[in-house]
Figure: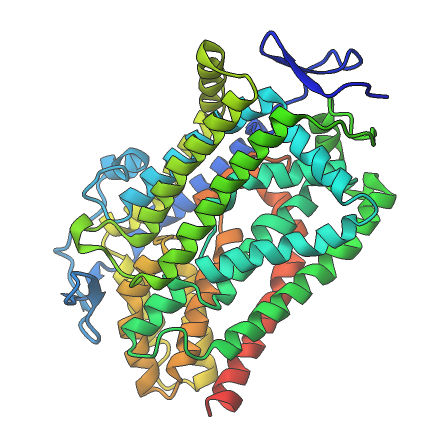
Length: 513
């Protein structure tokens, strides 16, 4: 029985006198998960190198709109073997070359690395104060006897943030806390990932008012922004039902028999040192104030993301090629620093002890930087080999003479595939949607359906493709490696894929017929 709350003593965390061991960090990258992810991405790197050698080099002509955004000119593809080919040193040093400020997308890579290091630094310091565990115990106490209400509320909240404000990377720091909460409620890391990152991604793909995919795509195609919302609302509802139809029975099964969890052994090791069996909660005024401070700043992140909906979702001329999504992400990084350090100071962690913990946390996630850079290198290799446009041309050529249903599926596929090379949804929209929109218009596919296919292909790829640095980072911070993630989430994603195909066909042949 715990008789007193969490107290700091010599920069260590104890619970009364009955827990002499420190709990493990909530932010800690699994070396095994990192290794598996790096191996998978390296296979894709090798495959991309092979493609640059077997496919003909070619390119579309590029145009620039009034805002300075680049787009592909329709029917302008030409094979040209005089185009640059991939050099050996480009293949070898691709993970470093992607950081060149002159490279498209490099700002997003820098932003992800900055967010990654901030997560490690700030959350390790917060964990050292005990405020994260206190937050979990506070939530468990508040929802005592109603934890399945929380199970249904959390994924809805994450889906809402993804669908309304286009939030995905900004939510990464919350995932380890949700996983820790699931441990406290008797579930496993997979439930935590399902109700956080998977939910956010499903909401992002539904894109009810997502400014970075739907908003930009509709703008580029001359469609009223956020029109056709009824089909996206339907997608949101269907995605939520499918998600919970899988997660709810799984959580019940794990609660009754934890050994059936695919990550049971890994979770058991991760939970060592946490007294999740204890049901007592002791109020701590200092930690409560710190939590309120942190929560207010997290609401500010959401507010800024929502505000971006009302700002023209395009590139900001004053910032050159600095996209609005990058802009929001960098602000998010700064807010996490202010929120985290402020909460630490309120809990008594300050001065040298604070900087020591920040440094430890930063070092903890350094291995994941390599993972992000290697994953980003795939796009660099394809661009350097001048074959990205060739792949796009061959897919579009396959659409000729096809029925609208086949064309819709091919658009879905091409957006999904190009997620490997261009992770940014807004960048893909600017580059591809003018041409895809014109093609769909000529071949009898409604523009709203093309936008839906784009949103689905871009969104669902975020939690499936191993080239997504955000996904690899999230998995690395939990006990779930990529193969286990695919085996567990695969049935959910396949079911949703079938449902979204049905929604696309419904939209094309019934709603917009």
